[in-house]
Image 1 (cartoon, one colour):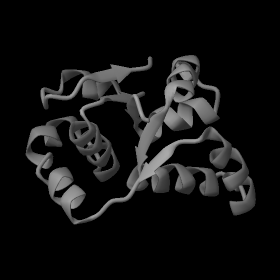
Image 2 (tube, rainbow, N blue to C red):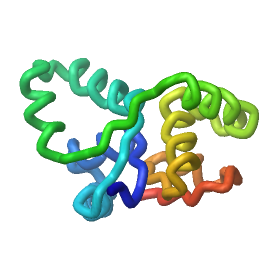
Image 3 (cartoon, one colour):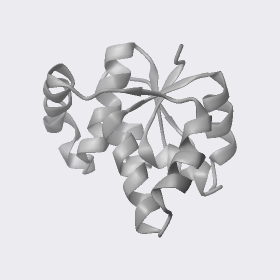
Image 4 (cartoon, one colour):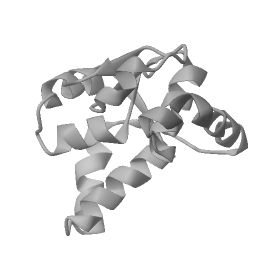
Length: 128
């Protein structure tokens, strides 16, 4: 069972061993969820860096992250967050993460400091 929801930036920090990766590793070890939209963002970044699909799967699959599908209800919940997040420049993936955290009643873990000022009824944990 997930204890938090990861943003793509947090997962990328872990994979790239960036500042804050230790906090993400600790969080992943307790169980995390990730929107399929955020997973797609991570895969895209890894592919852009030249990583083949087989290696991407080898890196991501052992993490045991619960990937949550992005369906009609999540589309509405994510879209409705746009007015409250537009000033911070949040992407679709960012909002999908926050919508999932809202839905599951969990905190959202991110490397994006702009999230710290959000007032959406979601606890945001910024890793750096």
